[in-house]
Length: 386
Image (tube, rainbow, N blue to C red; front, top):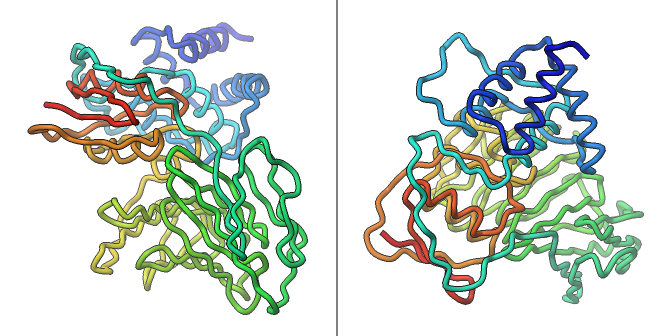
C-alpha cells in the first residue's frame, strides 16, 4: 500500500467511524473524486461489505451530491468540478457503507444552529422493518414475517414461498389463461417488503403500499396495480408488455428499472426512470427523467434524481430540497406515526441524508438543528410546534 493509499484508508475509517473532522472529510472526498484511487476505494468497500453482509445491487452514485448533502459548504462548488459518478456496483455499495457511517449525523446544507432540546412525552419510536400481509384470491390473509418461512400456500399450480428475510416469491408459475388468481401484497405504515412476480420481475414495496397481481401472467400483457411507492426491476418481454396501474396513470415498461411514488397524500404521482425506458401516458422517459402526474391527469416530464428516488430502497432518507411537510410525510409512513402541526409553523427547505435504521428521536435531533420544535406524545403522535 502506497503512502497515499494508506492515507485514504485512514480517512475512510475516520469517516465510517463518524470521527473525522471537516478537513479530513474534505480531504477524503478529494481522494474519491480522483479516478486514480477508485480501485483502492472499491477494495476497502469490498472488505467492509463482506463484514457487514451488504449486497451491491445499488444504483449509480453521485459522490459529489453525497458530499454536498453530508457536509455544508461555505462556498459554492467550482463549476469545473464535475460530479464523480462510479458506475460499478461495488462503488455504489461503498456509498451505502458511507451513509451507514454517517449514523446519527443529519447535517444540512445551510448554516448550523444550536440544537433545540427535544420534548419526549412518550416512548421513542423504532424504525420500520420487513413486514407485510399477503391477501390470497379467496380473501385469506397471511402475515409475513421471519416466523413464517418456507412454503406458505399454493395458488393454483403456483407455490408461494416466504424467504424470511423480507422477500416473497412465486415458483412454478404457468401461463394458462384458465383460473387466473389474484393476490395482493400490502405493507403497513412502518413496513417494507420485496416481491418476485411470476415472470421474475422484482418489486420493492415501501411503507403503506400495496400491489395486486396475478399468480400467473396470461394473455398479451402483464398488468399489475399498486398504491403507495414501489421500485421495479422488470423482466422485459416485448410480446407481453409490463404495465403498472397507479392511480390515474399507467406506466409501461420497455426494459426497465423505475420507481413509482403514488401516495395519495403527495401532490403528484411521480415515476422516475433509472435504466432503460418507460412510457407514462404518451410520454417516453429517458434514464434520469421523471414524469409527474397531477390530480387533473396532466403529466409533465422533467429531470429527476434517481439516487433520491430510490434512497428508501437502499436504506436511507434523501431530503433534497424538501419542505418540512415532505419530510414529515416520509417519517410518518416509516415510523408509523401521526404528525400534527400546532400554531404558525414557518416554511423551510431541508437538504440532507440519514439512515432509516435510526430511531425517530435520533432523526429528530437533526431536525432540531434547524430549529424544528416538536414533542412526541403517546400513541405515536408527533406534534410540530412553532
